[in-house]
Length: 241
Figure 1 (cartoon, rainbow, N blue to C red):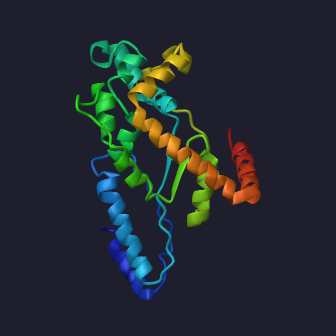
Figure 2: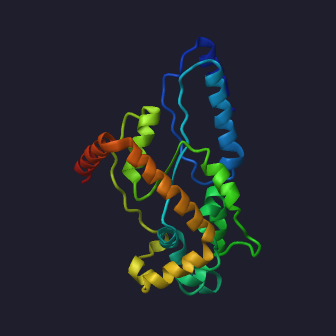
Figure 3: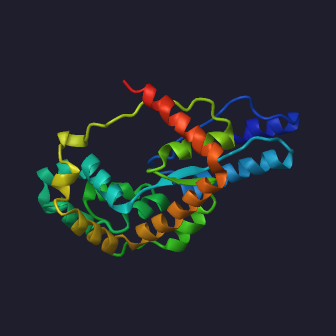
């Protein structure tokens, strides 16, 4: 709502706002699908109706489902499991089995993260409707992948005019001082992969749809875009401490 007033003012002047506005829909009680996306779509209609060029891009990245589970576990669950195995299970597989379709759940409802992290489980009747996942993600301007982080960034910049792309990589300190590694979390990585394929079929449907679509989009952009990605990677590498 706060953005509609300046949008109407800009539309009346027939000129785009003279600023870039970027926000991260991270975690909170205001859900993206219910509130944020409809609000941004209303905003876009104001500009389009006035013939004003003010691009609004919805961007996200999907991740290999097993990698997503391991990352979530390292960040917010490992230390809780260490201190309270009765609630969080006594290993990675015990916890993962209690939070089916983790990634697609958080795509639709960010607050689902609270159950996975703080309670160590989803409700017994928890289900994810893949049709709703598609209905949401198909409205995004870019659905990239974590593996293609820089390609997603450059494509987003091309769509919006984002001027600064250089960044510094950060390795976060896991909560509670947890120091588990991928190898210690999943000593048998293929067994873990089989488990996640079993407990997270919607996560795999999502990843197996949108990863190939993004790869196809990158191929269509051709050699020139690939060269620009290579230059961006060189620039980012030079910026690391």
